[in-house]
Length: 340
Ligand SMILES: NC(=O)c1ccc[n+]([C@@H]2O[C@H](COP(=O)([O-])OP(=O)(O)OC[C@H]3O[C@@H](n4cnc5c(N)ncnc54)[C@H](O)[C@@H]3O)[C@@H](O)[C@H]2O)c1
Ligand SMILES: [Zn+2]
Ligand SMILES: [Zn+2]
Image (cartoon, rainbow, N blue to C red; front, side):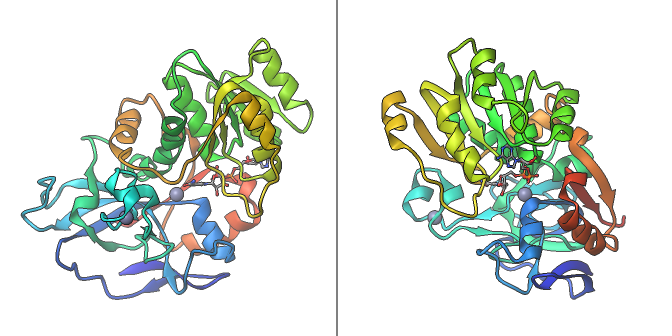
């Protein structure tokens, strides 16, 4: 089979290798589509310290079941179309015991700690597959995973209808968070430094956009919220100055969720956290959010195809990864479609 492999940082190829053989409890999938994520680009650059090499990348995977243990918990069958929950957890540690499997002490993410699914065949624990609705395209299914990330940030902040939700970073994660916020009946305010990204957000129907390279985002949010500031602030850029700014954008008794992964630490005036009594919460990957993501895509409440820049073949993938690395601004989501 073909697979997309990083031999080491800066070395990506479409290789030929033996198809995997399922172990006890695992299903074998014929992969149909796999999304390219910012974290795959980080793995290519060698900037994600969690990635070990050589590594087959890919954690945004949709495919068809070729074989599966008959006694699987979800009663999935051969021929079923599924997406992969790519965050493997131990099931025994404290976070797992309270359902927070996404921050398991021994979390293993596909394409990071273990081989991913950007390949023609892939094996995965049978209980970590989610059936997709009838009629959903493979591209849509492969984009369920990034939607779960945005959804998890929304859930971690407890966003409610009628609230203002300020989102910093209009990349795929922030744009989708904006769409979800509006589905939840909130007013989304998307903040970025790049006007093209913001124009695109407007096209998606995002209510408010703020270009923080030309106007003061604190003043802008103050004006939009008539002085109250945002009940929820989502950091989706990974920039240190954006992390710092969340404290200014949030209202008294408000919530901040941190989804972006900054490379360096951020200094924060914690007196503001005390004074405003802010809840600050991390938001890592997702937990139990695939079903809702698939439902939002299927009902077109969140149309992920709007952020789909390109569909490519396995053969085109190495060159495309190199180009995304060089020109990240040209891409939102890219999905690799395997040959039929
Ligand atoms: N927590 C998780 O599980 C998880 C999962 C996926 C991605 N992430 C992280 O979330 C972040 C967003 O991911 P993405 O794929 O959308 O990234 P992206 O790089 O495509 O988008 C980031 C956006 O932030 C903007 N930006 C950068 N600095 C800014 C600043 N100071 N102020 C305002 N905007 C700024 C950029 O212009 C860009 O549009 C990244 O840090 C990524 O590593 C986290
Ligand atoms: Zn991803
Ligand atoms: Zn665990």
